[in-house]
Image (cartoon, rainbow, N blue to C red; front, side):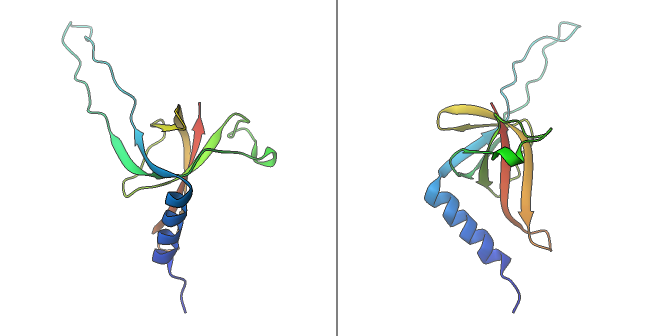
Length: 120
């Protein structure tokens, strides 16, 4: 019998909702201004990714390296849309920038869960 990755994603979402809750990842607000010709710069719309995240977790000492700082944190984040590096997320009232994203996927590439590395 083959492993059921659809159930694995459903199980991970249940755990994220149980210990965390609804959350959003969003792009940085962009302030419009003027270009060198004095013409207004078009402001792109803010991107918002709705989903669910776990509470903030810290990296263990053995995980710290050149890419992961001792001050970095992480959350599991589940959504249908894909967040991007440098987007923002607020966890426990503190805003963090997404520094890296790793995904656990089935052999066929179906998403099970995403882990967001956060930097304050």
